[in-house]
Length: 242
Image (cartoon, rainbow, N blue to C red; front, side, top):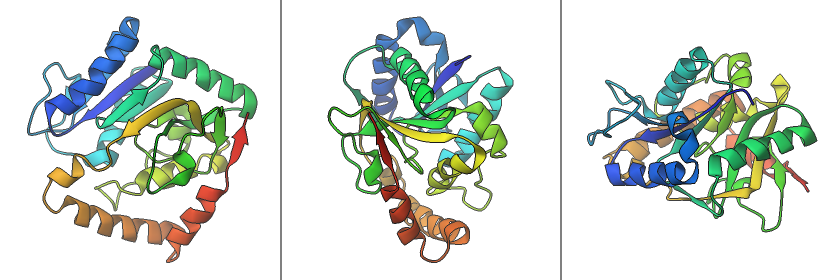
Protein backbone atom coordinates (compact mmCIF):
# COMPACT_ATOMS: atom_id res chain seq x y z
CA UNK A 1 0.00 0.00 0.00
CA UNK A 2 1.52 3.29 -1.08
CA UNK A 3 -0.48 5.85 0.89
CA UNK A 4 -3.63 5.47 2.96
CA UNK A 5 -5.87 8.27 4.19
CA UNK A 6 -8.64 7.75 6.72
CA UNK A 7 -11.61 10.11 6.36
CA UNK A 8 -14.46 10.40 8.87
CA UNK A 9 -17.68 11.81 7.42
CA UNK A 10 -19.04 14.44 9.80
CA UNK A 11 -22.68 15.44 9.91
CA UNK A 12 -24.74 15.95 13.04
CA UNK A 13 -23.47 16.26 16.61
CA UNK A 14 -19.79 17.06 17.00
CA UNK A 15 -19.62 14.63 19.92
CA UNK A 16 -20.45 11.70 17.65
CA UNK A 17 -17.64 12.44 15.22
CA UNK A 18 -15.21 13.34 17.98
CA UNK A 19 -15.65 9.90 19.55
CA UNK A 20 -14.41 7.95 16.52
CA UNK A 21 -11.85 10.64 15.64
CA UNK A 22 -10.27 10.47 19.09
CA UNK A 23 -10.34 6.68 19.06
CA UNK A 24 -8.32 6.63 15.85
CA UNK A 25 -5.89 9.35 16.94
CA UNK A 26 -5.23 7.52 20.20
CA UNK A 27 -4.81 4.24 18.37
CA UNK A 28 -2.45 5.50 15.64
CA UNK A 29 -0.94 8.82 16.80
CA UNK A 30 1.90 8.68 14.26
CA UNK A 31 -0.74 8.70 11.49
CA UNK A 32 -2.53 11.80 12.78
CA UNK A 33 -1.86 13.72 9.55
CA UNK A 34 -3.61 10.98 7.58
CA UNK A 35 -6.69 10.76 9.84
CA UNK A 36 -9.04 13.43 8.54
CA UNK A 37 -12.56 14.73 9.15
CA UNK A 38 -14.70 15.81 6.21
CA UNK A 39 -17.40 18.21 7.40
CA UNK A 40 -20.37 17.66 5.11
CA UNK A 41 -21.90 21.12 5.77
CA UNK A 42 -23.01 19.95 9.20
CA UNK A 43 -25.21 22.33 11.22
CA UNK A 44 -22.62 21.73 13.97
CA UNK A 45 -19.27 22.48 12.28
CA UNK A 46 -16.33 20.31 13.29
CA UNK A 47 -13.44 22.43 14.55
CA UNK A 48 -10.22 21.47 12.82
CA UNK A 49 -11.92 19.61 9.98
CA UNK A 50 -9.69 18.88 7.01
CA UNK A 51 -12.36 20.17 4.66
CA UNK A 52 -15.89 21.55 4.94
CA UNK A 53 -18.39 21.33 2.10
CA UNK A 54 -20.55 24.35 1.29
CA UNK A 55 -23.58 22.07 0.88
CA UNK A 56 -24.63 18.68 2.22
CA UNK A 57 -23.39 16.25 -0.43
CA UNK A 58 -24.83 13.25 1.42
CA UNK A 59 -22.80 10.04 1.57
CA UNK A 60 -22.23 9.45 -2.14
CA UNK A 61 -21.35 13.01 -3.11
CA UNK A 62 -19.02 13.36 -0.14
CA UNK A 63 -17.36 10.03 -0.94
CA UNK A 64 -16.74 11.03 -4.55
CA UNK A 65 -15.39 14.44 -3.56
CA UNK A 66 -13.03 12.89 -1.03
CA UNK A 67 -11.85 10.24 -3.50
CA UNK A 68 -11.13 12.79 -6.23
CA UNK A 69 -9.33 15.13 -3.86
CA UNK A 70 -7.14 12.50 -2.23
CA UNK A 71 -6.43 10.66 -5.48
CA UNK A 72 -5.07 13.96 -6.81
CA UNK A 73 -2.86 14.14 -3.71
CA UNK A 74 -1.32 10.74 -4.33
CA UNK A 75 -3.50 8.48 -2.20
CA UNK A 76 -3.46 4.80 -3.07
CA UNK A 77 -6.27 3.90 -0.65
CA UNK A 78 -8.99 5.82 1.18
CA UNK A 79 -10.79 4.51 4.27
CA UNK A 80 -14.15 6.30 4.38
CA UNK A 81 -15.82 5.98 7.78
CA UNK A 82 -19.29 6.86 9.01
CA UNK A 83 -19.12 8.90 12.19
CA UNK A 84 -21.46 6.52 14.04
CA UNK A 85 -19.05 3.59 14.19
CA UNK A 86 -16.81 2.40 17.03
CA UNK A 87 -13.98 -0.08 16.70
CA UNK A 88 -13.95 -3.12 18.96
CA UNK A 89 -10.65 -4.74 19.83
CA UNK A 90 -6.94 -3.96 19.90
CA UNK A 91 -5.25 -0.64 19.27
CA UNK A 92 -3.17 0.18 16.22
CA UNK A 93 -6.37 0.19 14.19
CA UNK A 94 -5.12 1.88 11.05
CA UNK A 95 -1.73 0.20 10.97
CA UNK A 96 -3.37 -3.14 11.64
CA UNK A 97 -5.80 -2.63 8.74
CA UNK A 98 -2.85 -1.95 6.44
CA UNK A 99 -1.24 -5.24 7.47
CA UNK A 100 -4.50 -7.14 7.27
CA UNK A 101 -5.25 -5.83 3.80
CA UNK A 102 -1.79 -6.90 2.65
CA UNK A 103 -2.48 -10.36 4.03
CA UNK A 104 -5.84 -10.53 2.25
CA UNK A 105 -4.21 -9.59 -1.04
CA UNK A 106 -1.69 -12.40 -0.65
CA UNK A 107 -4.69 -14.74 -0.50
CA UNK A 108 -6.97 -13.34 -3.21
CA UNK A 109 -5.02 -10.80 -5.25
CA UNK A 110 -5.89 -7.11 -5.58
CA UNK A 111 -8.63 -6.00 -3.19
CA UNK A 112 -10.89 -3.24 -4.46
CA UNK A 113 -12.86 -2.81 -1.26
CA UNK A 114 -11.87 -4.02 2.21
CA UNK A 115 -14.20 -3.61 5.17
CA UNK A 116 -14.24 -4.39 8.86
CA UNK A 117 -16.92 -6.80 9.97
CA UNK A 118 -19.67 -5.59 12.32
CA UNK A 119 -21.11 -6.97 15.53
CA UNK A 120 -24.58 -6.96 13.93
CA UNK A 121 -26.11 -5.93 10.63
CA UNK A 122 -29.88 -6.04 10.05
CA UNK A 123 -29.52 -5.61 6.27
CA UNK A 124 -26.42 -7.41 5.03
CA UNK A 125 -25.68 -10.70 6.83
CA UNK A 126 -22.34 -11.22 5.09
CA UNK A 127 -20.97 -8.26 7.09
CA UNK A 128 -21.44 -9.89 10.51
CA UNK A 129 -18.22 -10.93 12.26
CA UNK A 130 -17.51 -14.62 12.77
CA UNK A 131 -15.61 -15.26 15.97
CA UNK A 132 -12.23 -16.79 15.23
CA UNK A 133 -12.55 -16.16 11.50
CA UNK A 134 -10.06 -14.42 9.26
CA UNK A 135 -11.51 -13.04 6.01
CA UNK A 136 -14.74 -13.44 4.09
CA UNK A 137 -14.72 -13.02 0.32
CA UNK A 138 -18.01 -11.28 -0.54
CA UNK A 139 -19.85 -9.87 -3.57
CA UNK A 140 -20.48 -6.47 -1.99
CA UNK A 141 -20.13 -4.60 1.30
CA UNK A 142 -22.22 -2.26 3.39
CA UNK A 143 -20.65 1.17 2.97
CA UNK A 144 -20.31 2.16 6.63
CA UNK A 145 -16.52 1.83 6.58
CA UNK A 146 -15.15 0.82 3.16
CA UNK A 147 -11.40 0.97 2.59
CA UNK A 148 -11.22 1.61 -1.15
CA UNK A 149 -8.38 1.00 -3.56
CA UNK A 150 -8.01 4.16 -5.67
CA UNK A 151 -7.12 2.08 -8.73
CA UNK A 152 -10.45 0.23 -8.45
CA UNK A 153 -12.32 3.52 -8.01
CA UNK A 154 -10.67 4.86 -11.17
CA UNK A 155 -11.46 1.73 -13.19
CA UNK A 156 -15.07 1.93 -12.04
CA UNK A 157 -15.24 5.47 -13.40
CA UNK A 158 -15.85 6.85 -9.93
CA UNK A 159 -18.93 6.15 -7.90
CA UNK A 160 -22.21 5.95 -9.80
CA UNK A 161 -24.67 8.22 -7.99
CA UNK A 162 -25.97 10.58 -10.68
CA UNK A 163 -29.62 9.70 -10.07
CA UNK A 164 -29.32 9.00 -6.34
CA UNK A 165 -27.93 11.96 -4.42
CA UNK A 166 -28.98 10.50 -1.06
CA UNK A 167 -26.63 7.58 -1.51
CA UNK A 168 -28.52 4.57 -0.14
CA UNK A 169 -27.72 1.58 -2.34
CA UNK A 170 -24.83 3.37 -4.05
CA UNK A 171 -22.30 1.63 -1.79
CA UNK A 172 -23.79 -1.77 -2.65
CA UNK A 173 -23.67 -1.21 -6.40
CA UNK A 174 -20.18 0.31 -6.31
CA UNK A 175 -18.60 -2.48 -4.29
CA UNK A 176 -20.45 -5.18 -6.24
CA UNK A 177 -18.55 -4.12 -9.37
CA UNK A 178 -15.17 -5.05 -7.90
CA UNK A 179 -15.19 -8.59 -9.26
CA UNK A 180 -15.97 -7.62 -12.86
CA UNK A 181 -13.08 -5.14 -12.79
CA UNK A 182 -10.51 -7.65 -11.53
CA UNK A 183 -10.63 -6.91 -7.80
CA UNK A 184 -11.83 -8.73 -4.71
CA UNK A 185 -14.25 -7.51 -2.05
CA UNK A 186 -13.26 -8.62 1.47
CA UNK A 187 -14.71 -8.46 4.99
CA UNK A 188 -12.22 -8.85 7.84
CA UNK A 189 -13.34 -10.78 10.93
CA UNK A 190 -10.31 -9.52 12.84
CA UNK A 191 -11.32 -5.85 12.45
CA UNK A 192 -14.72 -5.35 14.03
CA UNK A 193 -17.05 -2.37 14.37
CA UNK A 194 -20.14 -1.50 16.31
CA UNK A 195 -22.46 0.62 14.20
CA UNK A 196 -25.40 2.72 15.34
CA UNK A 197 -27.53 2.41 12.20
CA UNK A 198 -29.13 5.59 10.80
CA UNK A 199 -28.19 7.63 13.88
CA UNK A 200 -27.71 10.77 11.79
CA UNK A 201 -30.27 10.03 9.08
CA UNK A 202 -33.10 9.72 11.60
CA UNK A 203 -32.32 13.20 12.94
CA UNK A 204 -33.16 14.84 9.58
CA UNK A 205 -36.91 15.13 8.96
CA UNK A 206 -38.03 13.15 5.94
CA UNK A 207 -34.57 11.93 4.99
CA UNK A 208 -35.18 8.22 5.51
CA UNK A 209 -38.30 8.23 3.31
CA UNK A 210 -36.63 10.19 0.51
CA UNK A 211 -33.49 8.04 0.66
CA UNK A 212 -35.50 4.81 0.57
CA UNK A 213 -37.46 5.97 -2.47
CA UNK A 214 -34.26 6.95 -4.27
CA UNK A 215 -32.67 3.61 -3.39
CA UNK A 216 -35.67 1.73 -4.80
CA UNK A 217 -35.40 3.54 -8.15
CA UNK A 218 -31.61 3.27 -8.24
CA UNK A 219 -31.27 -0.45 -7.52
CA UNK A 220 -34.28 -1.36 -9.66
CA UNK A 221 -32.60 0.32 -12.63
CA UNK A 222 -29.35 -1.57 -12.03
CA UNK A 223 -30.43 -4.95 -10.66
CA UNK A 224 -34.02 -5.23 -11.86
CA UNK A 225 -37.42 -5.22 -10.19
CA UNK A 226 -36.40 -8.16 -8.02
CA UNK A 227 -33.32 -6.42 -6.71
CA UNK A 228 -33.97 -7.48 -3.12
CA UNK A 229 -33.82 -11.12 -4.18
CA UNK A 230 -30.70 -10.39 -6.23
CA UNK A 231 -29.05 -8.82 -3.19
CA UNK A 232 -30.01 -11.82 -1.05
CA UNK A 233 -28.35 -14.13 -3.58
CA UNK A 234 -25.23 -11.96 -3.63
CA UNK A 235 -25.12 -11.78 0.16
CA UNK A 236 -25.18 -15.58 0.34
CA UNK A 237 -22.50 -15.89 -2.33
CA UNK A 238 -19.51 -15.59 -0.02
CA UNK A 239 -16.55 -17.72 1.03
CA UNK A 240 -14.58 -17.89 4.25
CA UNK A 241 -10.82 -17.50 3.88
CA UNK A 242 -9.14 -19.06 6.89
